[in-house]
Length: 305
Image (cartoon, rainbow, N blue to C red):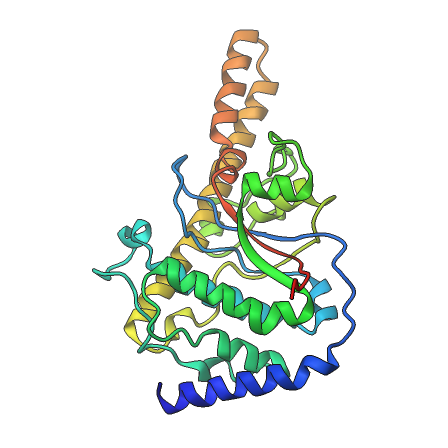
């Protein structure tokens, strides 16, 4: 173990022991915090796509500021970007290993104790493979950041999310299309303009009675192309490409679906109208693709010790 690792381990142990007797009395969450992954562009299940960047104000009650939580999501996305299923979108010829490319100094500007938490979370030396890295990172996040606040973070499937929320197994996880959810032109979308109701906003609209509202951040982390080391930059580019392309493409499909519904409403011929409605439903892919994603969930945790 190098000096930095030894110092880090010592700091972690000392802090954990010193705070055992002075834990704040955090109030339990009344709802779930559920953050979706971006949707794949096909009906195929593609694991380890990045999670959207979002925050909920309830986390301030637990001393977790927005900057720290987004940093946690950004690092999780980079860590899991090495999965083989994502390689076709990156130039790297082998799975990404971060042991020699970690630079904790990039997050030293975070305020308060969460700065130290986040810096320690990305200390993943010698953990190989995206699944192992992801699992180790989440375990470390729980041990250092979430469990001390009686919270737990995990990744669940849509089926598991429904079960946690007590929903019917067939309950949709994305709201039906509303004609008012219009989208910008393709040119505007490419330039960064977004619909008033973005793709994750539509998913949240469906679940708003069961989960906390989310403040959606920009799709991609600012300064993603300034990561230290080519390996991290390659991983950050994979994450950024998915975060942007997925949202743009699904909004384009939504716009085409709305147009088809409008055409159906103006068509007198019943057979032609049914054909247009069917085509519109096929073009509206957000609902169908949402069924294939997993969710980053924060919920109450009880220490069994």
